[in-house]
Image (cartoon, rainbow, N blue to C red):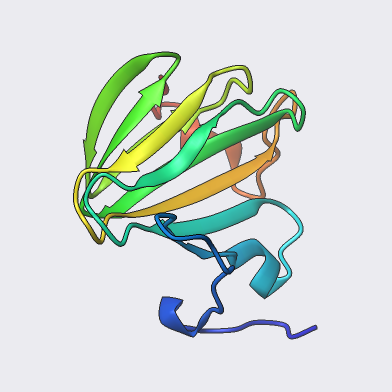
Length: 135
């Protein structure tokens, strides 16, 4: 296993998908990451489904989505949100039902997930976060 790597997204081999599915880049698999899952989805067409409706009850995963290009419509427990590039969508509760579709071709979403734990253990100094707001 390599100790580090620098790659462009288009250099990461995609998972073969069916017609009408977004391009799927399996980032976690490609880089052999073990602490969290991460994938990138890129829509080829307006209205294309990026994330099928699902929850994470069976995996107990928290998920974070980052829209890096275009605009997506996210559905979280039946509530819809239009999410432009530069925006984040957090679903820390594994029971939240979530889905997303691209409003425009080229919409790109990074999906990051990991198993929920009682608390996050950081190597950073806890005092740096004492006055940092949280939702």
